[in-house]
Image (cartoon, rainbow over all chains, first blue to last red):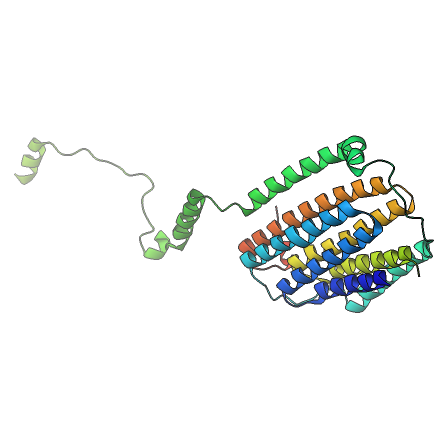
Amino acid sequence: MIEAVLVAGAVVCAVRAIRATQLLSSALWLAGVSALVSILLYRLGAHQIAVIELSVGAGLVTVLFVFAISIAGDDGLTERTILPNWLAVGLIALFVGLLAWMVLPLDEPALATAETAFESVLWGDRALDVLVQTVMIFTGVLCLVMLLKERAPSARRGSLVSERELARPSAAARGNGHRPAIAVIEPAPSPAEVEDIHA
Amino acid sequence: MNAMTMIALAVMGLVGAGLYGLLIMRNLFKVVIALQILVKGALLALVAAGQASEQVNLGQSLAVTVIVADTIVAVVGLGLAVQAKRLLGTLDVKALSNLRG
């Protein structure tokens, strides 16, 4: 019975997160989905995963969402894609129906008990996964630093100069556009030539 | 209706809601939220499959990998959204299709 309540709550929170008009509300509904999924995971016997999902999914990701929304602001974009709503709903219904046809009905499995500890499996048998996770975390941090890096002051100044150059009217527009391409420099007359000219 | 059937219904609901959001939404934040919901359904399916096949630890260790990858995807997606808002002034995913180069 409690599973039914949890499942219904998770699906309702997911739909509300999609349909909410404000981004902050969507982030909070998403945190609700994470919390309910973590309770379901705990009741399935995956205690460690439930704790990780609750702390990362409902905690860290929600804080990141609120931080990003506070930086970027709510766009208020409520337009939908070119895909009609009825077509999207039909495609999803078809997908869910096919999934249900393949999966259901499910037998009740005996609650499996782990022979070995989860830590030994994770750090021993799945050591490559842990290495890949470490690489992914470093890659994600580097991507985030590069994405959120402010533009350099020199680049900003250069762009301003170029904009100023572009905004300046051209020489032809100012009326003195005909300038000689090659300047002929004549030598200065000597004092004797100056006297001859005056004479 | 037993517990595993309820978990399967939860997986279908979460994956369906996530796919619906990916198909419909144009806001970049909403796309990331839909992707998060979709991955939560997959995470639940992984743990349930491990439980059903009596390989509890294998399902849990794969679920840890999924959580880490999902978080990285969310972080990079949010960073992209913030940069798109700074550069383009909008969060519309259709505006991103105008990028060239």
